[in-house]
Image (cartoon, rainbow, N blue to C red):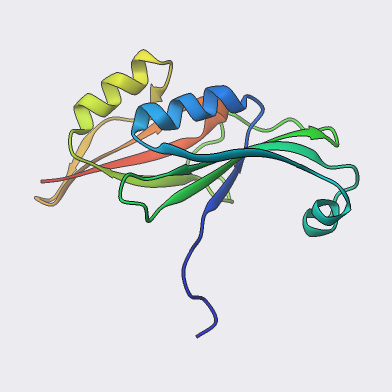
Amino acid sequence: MAVRRMEHVGIVVNDLPAAIEFFVELGLGVQGEGSVEGGWVDRIVGLDGVRADFAIMQTPDGNGRLELTKFHSPSTPVGDGQAPANKPGIRHILFAVDDIDGVVARLRARGAELVGEVVRYENVYRLCYVRGPEGIIVELAERL
């Protein structure tokens, strides 16, 4: 088997502190922060003159991680912070939560918006999409 596990999902952001704050409010912890630059990172990502800051966020169970990255150089193209859920590409990340209403309320108090509404899927889950900073869509799932 070639893949042993999924290590993390990378998300490029313009406002790293706001993205960190959003995911901390969601319940993730900061596992580490740092900066990268130099020829080795240029060769990995296929860009010249890379200078970036990053934060590794980790779920409470220790199994899920996000890498939030702010590129300072080269210049970053403008993204579509209001892309709909059906636009090709990575559109959302799902997190299991214990109290979906409480999580939504906390995130909305910090500027996040509910994309649609909280719905019940059969007798298994309550689900919703929340749009956070940079237009990041997070799906929340509360097991019934």
